[in-house]
Length: 306
Ligand SMILES: C[S@@+](CC[C@H](N)C(=O)[O-])C[C@H]1O[C@@H](n2cnc3c(N)ncnc32)[C@H](O)[C@@H]1O
Image (cartoon, rainbow, N blue to C red; front, side):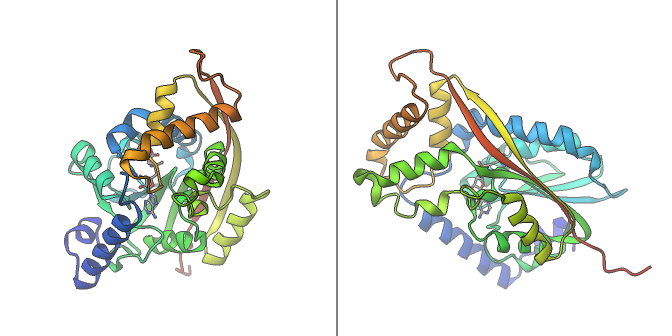
């Protein structure tokens, strides 16, 4: 089934599943807007830089088909990185960006949709719509998969999205100071209730000593071959306090009532400043983020025998 057909002919079963996904999303993020696509596109410099670095290094190894490459970008967010991906694609492709957030998908469709590219809602940690299975030659994902604790399910879903001989190229966070800030805030009486499910939003590899080995094991169990997983130490400098505020607000996973959000953001910035010993009153705000990025490649074997 083609990508176009997959998008345009939902059957009863897939329609029901789509509704369920939206409900889940609404339930989880109902109080504050977790996903502010406009703010995100103004503040995702780190994500864009890393996507470019990884694509520049690895894109030449991707084995494109001669024609009709069907590509999916999981956790596309506002669509700006999906848009950057196009530079590395051959001419003949159909590209589908997907995200659990309806508001992100709407923004991406409004800003980056054309005859070759479109965006749809999908929860990669949930049940896949049947029409999407075995339907893509290439699965990409940038800065999204650390949000899903059931990593086996994620890899099984990616495997099932792929056609035989398809490939995936994924980058996401192993560990990051952001997750330490979440945990510190969750221990404060003031935020303990609001952040009681904090571990859901901490990368499953944040405390791992060998995340690459854990992922290789999962991918092998799922059936991938030619697996290559790198866990790379990265550095990013935030020297604009407003940029950091925007980045935190654009993707806030917690249900903080709107009227308390200003207070929450101030506490977030205070914890961050204390962690980095930044004088909040000092105009020379400068924070060096050290984090670890997972760069993952896998291939779905072909069952053809020659
Ligand atoms: C940090 S943004 C990354 C966006 C974009 N890929 C980029 O690199 O700028 C992470 C995105 O993953 C999405 N996401 C989180 N959980 C997801 C899930 N279970 N299925 C699909 N997308 C998910 C979020 O809604 C968010 O838009």
